[in-house]
Image (cartoon, rainbow, N blue to C red; front, side, top):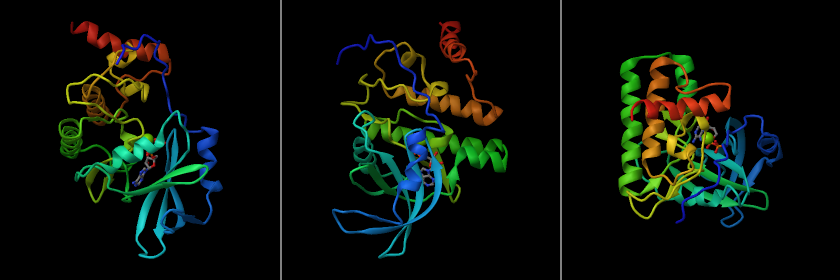
Length: 250
Ligand SMILES: Nc1ncnc2c1ncn2[C@@H]1O[C@H](COP(=O)(O)OP(=O)(O)O)[C@@H](O)[C@H]1O
Ligand SMILES: [Mg+2]
């Protein structure tokens, strides 16, 4: 793969992205997998990101409750690839995938329902260093599995994409994930959320699984201090913060 010389275009998911905001009201009360005929009853919305909204659904046959992630069909973000990468995963600290389907407008991913993401968890529970260390350990365990067994870069590790269920960490949102041909391959370049981006992403280089480790470090600092590690309201200054730390250590 060629080195990408294009200036990185930073994607900062917008919470008020009009299209994503409109997904939930557009969904019908019964969501049908037209391939299998399986029907799900629409429940309350549980979260929204830059690309999708997530709601509770009840399988009308088994009466089991699941989380359903609904994203706009978009060849640019390639949300079918998200489902395919997610489908291949089986780890106690990765949110369990149950299936996916699509219709004319949306892609639906059915997965295990978690209690909350860790952003909300820490807002309500406060900071306990032992819990933080245990959470970081579980995220690292999931990353180790993704990287060494699956050669998958998650690409968008951040507190909003790390869920918790009965006290157990579950990594979610494989929307920017990419499977590399081998663990040490550098073939990834998709800027996720700026404040968690590794310097090599900002430099427009092809990256490897290490970018998830960088994001994990940012999350650790954030959980310990309560502040987003490199954050600045000024985007250029935030990029400078990320790049400067590396210069100081070279
Ligand atoms: N399985 C789940 N259980 C509970 N909440 C979830 C689940 N999946 C996602 N969420 C919530 O929905 C939000 C958006 O989902 P996410 O997959 O991150 O979408 P996006 O790709 O748009 O960022 C998450 O930040 C989280 O708060
Ligand atoms: Mg997300």
